[in-house]
Structures are given as C-alpha cells and as structure tokens.
Amino acid sequence: MKIYGKKRALEKLSGFRRSGRFPHALLFCGPKGIGKHVMADYAAMLYMCSENGTEPCMHCRGCTLAEQHIHPDVIFPVPAIEEIYRKPSNHKSMVDLMREFIASCYMKPVEGGVRVIVFEKLDELSVLMQNALLKFIEEPLEFNRYVFIAESRTNILQTVLSRVTAVDVDPADETELASALTEFGIGADRAHELYEMFAGNIGASVEYEKNGEDMVCLKSALRACDAIAAGKEFDCLQSFLALKTRDDIFETLGIMTDIFARAAALKSGVSTSGAYKQQTSRIASGHSLAAISRLYDEAVRLCGMSFTNPNVRLFAAECCGALFSAAEKV
Ligand SMILES: [Zn+2]
Image (cartoon, rainbow, N blue to C red; front, side, top):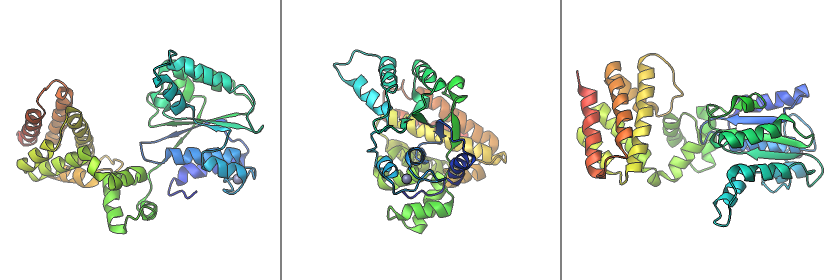
C-alpha cells in the first residue's frame, strides 16, 4: 500500500501506537476524494498486523488480507445493510438491520483475534441509527474495534463524537499530488492544473481527469465563472445551455456558490482551502466584495428556484441573465 500525503493523520496513528494507547474507535474526517477510505484500510491493517509496530508491516497475513478487503474479521456493514434494505422482500427498517448487525458482533471474531468494523458515511446515518451505534461503542467488547468515516462532523451526534478519536485527513501538497497522479499516467503540468482546481484532493483530481466528460456540472460551473470574470455573457449562456436537467443546473449553481464564497473570503483576506483557485482569484480580482456577495446571493436564490422552473433552457438563460446583472449592478 502506497500512501501519498496524509502525514498528520499517519503521524497521529503512529503516535497512538508509540504511546501504547491505540484508540478502540477512530473517525476519519474529510471531504470526498481526500483519502478517508485509504486511511481506514491503513488503520484496519494496523489493528490486524501481527508485528505490532508503529506502522503496519504490509506483508503479514493480517496486513495483506486487510489491504485486499478479504480479511474475515474486517467488516464493512453499511453497504451490506443498505443492500438488504433495498431488497423488495425486506420489510425491516435500517435501524432494525443495524441492530441485527450489532447483535452479530457480540460473537467472537472468526480468527479469534480482533474484529475491525468500518462504518462508512457516519454523517449520513440517521439519529436513530447513530443512537443504536452509540450503545455499541459505549461498552466496547474487548475484541471489537471501530473505524468510522465521515465527510464532516456536523451531522454526527455529540454523544457519538465524544466516544471516538477523530483524525482529520488533509489534502496532499503539490509534490505529493504530482507523485500520486503519476500512478494514473497524469503528467506534471496537468497535475499542477489539477492542484489549482482541487487543492490537493487526490480522489477529486483523478475522478475529474478520468471521467471529465461526465463531469458536465463542474465544467459548466468553472466555465460560467470564467465567463462572469471576463464579462462574456454569451460564454456564460453557452455553459448553462450545456446542462440538460434541472438537477444539473442545481448542482452547477451549487459549485458556483462555493466559488463565490471562496472569492468573497479571498477578497476579505481570509485564506481558503484553495480549491477552484483560478476561478476564485479571477472572480475576486475582477469584482468588488459587494458584487461577489450579490453573485453569491443570486446563485443561492437560483438554486432554490431550480426545481420550480419547468423549462430547463429558459431557466438556464434566466440564470445567466440574473448572475450577470448581479455582477454588474452598481
Ligand atoms: Zn502486518
């Protein structure tokens, strides 16, 4: 397993090992694509490694099986529960399925050592499901370990947060991103552009590069922002007209809202994570703070309207017109 960047998270885990107090419940937090799942795999290997070092040895049976997701005692219950829940023959609620899963974890692990349970999307689980989990982690059995994954802490119950050790996963720096991207055949020049766009988010960079054609919303949002910065209303209209559904317009406006918020922060001297760097600085340098605030408000308002307007092309034109008048209004 090769890990790029994530130095703080890796150091934190090694530190726990060195201190002899490795937590029984970890939470990896960070945006989509940042490498939370890589860190969860790494933690599972640490729990399963027979060498007991500050890093997983990467070659023992525990490490190898955990890395390949075929260790019988490393379990990923959330997708399994969702799959059962979606079956037409299923009549149980998600909470009931979660409780059934938890009950199964009171049995000893298959191989007799420890069991690692990786709960993905913790921040998307309902309050009821999180409460069911809470009882489970409050009184941990000696052989169970928990690894949670979440994009943000906002939707996680405080009671759950207080019982896990949170480890933030940071974006890669430019050199780390460039090395990671060579594995995907992406060269240094392109890596630089992707760094400017996604601020060192390796997953987002790879996804954009590989599935760029599918990422019509992101492309439209970036192009529309460039058009607004350059005062080219026709270009802005073209980028909105490339969108075929109201969902796409909604998503595009969401990305633009993010860029306007970053531009406002930049204009006010507040540093941001650096994503969409070019568009953010173009908007910031070409407009007053008041104009950027109007653009932000307008994009939020249009987001709200995107599901009430029946004609996609008319709405696309309306978006473009509204954003341009927000940018130019004195
Ligand atoms: Zn090992």
